[in-house]
Length: 226
Image 1 (cartoon, helix red, strand yellow):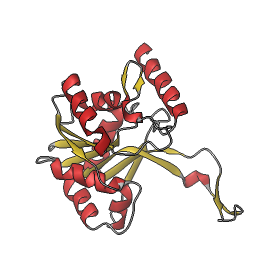
Image 2 (image 1 turned 120 degrees about the vertical axis):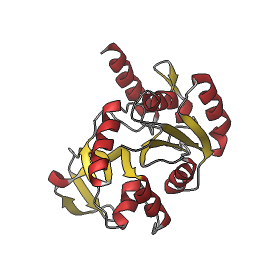
Image 3 (image 1 turned 90 degrees about the vertical axis):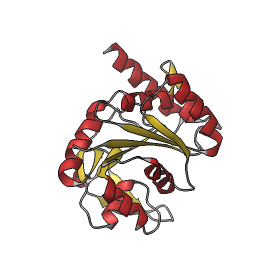
Image 4 (image 1 turned 180 degrees about the vertical axis):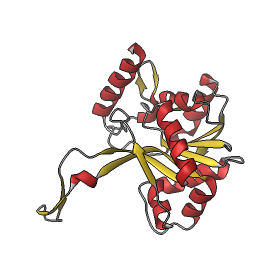
């Protein structure tokens, strides 16, 4: 099956949080990042975890690792200027891994099932990402704010994480990267390698605003009660 490493990417600036570092915001009794890492720590298929943080968050992140006693966390490292730079820093610190799970630290409602399904699909296809079908009508809008086109939503999916890859494939994708990419799957696509899409979850939200914190807390408390 091969050794599985996870990279938890949490080096963003939280620019839409009104100055609060969302990664350490307390929801449902513990830091947002703790909810995320706990899922990977308790997932039997994951062997190693690397957490990538911003310079301002390194000390707090290291302290959280000690407090939570995460046995699988092998490194807490500094991220780069772009998300893809941060993932690359994480890749460099994984030890002997055959498979890589990349996940946003700001998605605390991830489930073990999403990780396991991603690994299953990646083992067959080399690359896989969680996504959900788009339900809204999507418009292409000009710089002057006029509609230029309406996209057929039947084939539109909103990408999430986890995104899972063969280590050699994602490593090559980062080394051969051309320009800026908002997720790792886009870099693999640049290599003309197909990426398998599997069904994510509407509750697997990414926290970017204060309202998202409220929603994430409701989801997490609901899971505890369930």
